[in-house]
Length: 491
Image 1: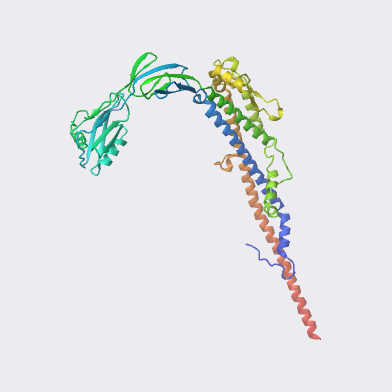
Image 2: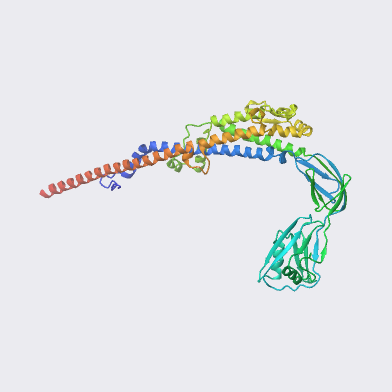
């Protein structure tokens, strides 16, 4: 219950201001708790920003250095793109293939022989569908009593197992059906009388149960000669030796595959830039100046300052909260060891088992704290000579530190460091009781709540004391007035 407050009517004093001034001194320990809480929150956020940097580096390493498809790309050229193009997987050999295309593969097409006269009615269609490559599927399709020609054609088009495109041309009164795939084997067999009657209504007047749909122009297989071997394929796209070819027209072309040195070079150069940026920002935090005289501002202090003054003050108050941090400094040291140490793997050319041998060295400027320096010419030469060894230098899958590739070592260290930081500073979805700074914050919140209760009691006590004083003064004033009236009245 709050104490009734009397504000200096009897004494003439500003009681509210006096209590406020007295409470400033009482509130000083609370201000210290609040400042400590704010400092911990800033430190927590600094830690988490470091984890964002480390996770970004880890993501780059995973996407660009550990995937064979990213590092060992193949460059494919065609002497005549209008005849044939190709792509190659990372495991493809470097080859030169001469291709002479006689025919490209085409799709089977059915054009109705009569006129369309679709009659509504529920039924179930049953077909045997043979694709251009000879594979066969039994297909059923339900037609509803409410279906129109348009909705029926939509159902035919949308049924994946049919694999057809169907449309109606109202000018010529024809329904056209085309297989989506190519090849000579394609066919559509109508299994029963209901199905045959349905296609008769679409204009395929000769449709018969148990027979192939009429009006067909057969598809054809692609025919070509590759390095002297004459062969066929049901599709214009096919794969040989991890190279995927796409035939486009009759004619001749030469397909050549080679290592895409730009891909692996750009991946490694990007890593050097990302690594340098990451350790530079972490080192900046580790060496950041700590201004211990600049404590977090109280609300009252902020009110007495301009926005710019608050900004400049807090810039100093937030500075140096991770200065000399052992988790980060230990993580950086382990990353440096992982980057500089030799990789012992029999699949790696001994000439390329360290980063320095492929043109990546450490800056001689000690102030740069382990920044990597790239010799682009030396790196390109190493990639040209032995890209597989370069890939293994980063990705050797050993069970010990010295047999693991550099990318794997770094990812291990990064994840270990992230884990330690999370134990200290948590992450966004964690509750405070899951990490040490959070537990400290919870403890401070309890102390702040208890202190606020205590301050309320102290403030109430001050007001009770001043109220008692006011009441005493008021009684004295009343007595004085009574006496003056009494003496004045006897004269």
